[in-house]
Image (cartoon, helix red, strand yellow):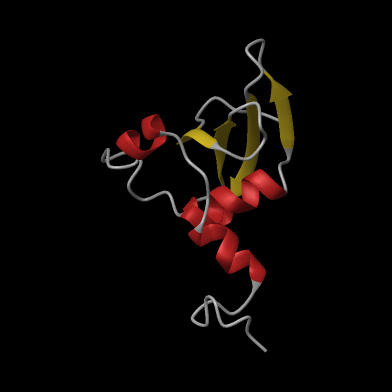
Length: 97
């Protein structure tokens, strides 16, 4: 049964993807040719289930996760210190576990 508010979304995780919080910086970068192919569901997975996490000195949070659909490359997601607003996303060529 749907709440009626978003009947086109089947479950809560889809709502989370549709309503992902981002910075203006992220929004401007997401149109770059090297970032256009990064899917929001990949970002969501890394945010929710990171394989590694580091907190930067400025409080921003780095999270990494492997994306099999992208040739098993590691996606780095930078979050603001609130732990949910996406600031930057890119495939990290130098990442190693």
